[in-house]
Length: 472
Image: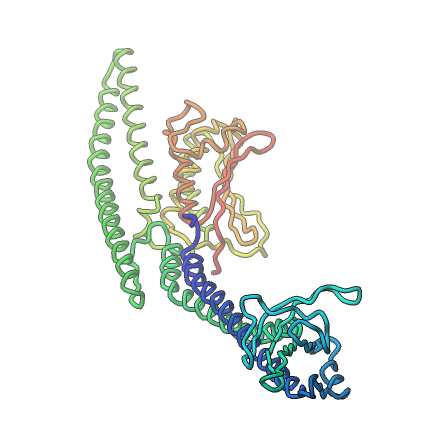
């Protein structure tokens, strides 16, 4: 049995196989039984006809009187398809009356006077009919006085086709109900397997339908004991994973506090030292320290954002319906001062169709705000001074599209998919660390959406965040 075969199919085959064996054995037994009963019925009719024919033979002087009226012969030969053949011979083997070609009894079983003998034989082929198998009854008689007794054999035969037809009819009448019974039993077995495996199906659906961060215990109170043991083992594993995730989350939170404070202090002290420094070489070294501290602080913030965006960290965050247009407008307004410092024209395009349905989604406000913040941060860093950055929110069928486009230098097409991976940077300019778009991708997947990166004419880059729409 292949390893990929389903448990349902395996159980059904193992339960069906004994039924097929029993059905075949029952059919064979029924055939043999039907053949036996048909043979007994044919033999009884042949023996009765043999004795009846023998009673019509009487001694007459030194000869025999066979009183077989023409009407009786017509009755014996009435059915052209199943003629009752007969032969009278005296001494045995010397033809007197009937059919000349009836087969002789077996050499080892010639029979004794008064004791009938039934055997199988074959009627030779002739120009009128092909050879056919016969069932023959023979009766050996002694006719006349003791001194002038004459031995005589009376044989009556019938084609075996009649017996075989009777056997087939008996077999059909028996096997057909047996087959119907087996089909019904197979259906009951299949229904029983379905009912027995239903708890496994419920367990599969309970696991499949869960979000990646859902670590609640599995409830299977009505399942069999074996399946409850499996559910208990899975629950223990889920509990261990939950404890590990909580410990990791606490570690990340503690690390954030431990790293942010010294980095902020380092940056502040370095900026103070930079302000007091007079030598150009010293100022250059201090400026590099400030940039390194700034980059490190940014990396710590990005790593914490990525940790919050991952599915394991999203289990404790509230998911609620929200207007993505309003969220995008508020977040864009918060980034306008940074855009002015960077020399970038940042704005939001609200020129959509007023009659279009509202852009409502169901998600985590903090994570979606974080995603848009990362898109804006990337655009402000890499678009360059004098560029335009535009935020748009549109409803497209059953999806809501949030896009951030810029008129900067853009990216080659072969980088559009790569920049969504962690720690992948298409350029060494700017102070990024290769996690911004990876965070956006994680947040999109947390919400059942996806991220697309593409170019726009005449130049620039556009990043689209597609999320499932939700009713208000």
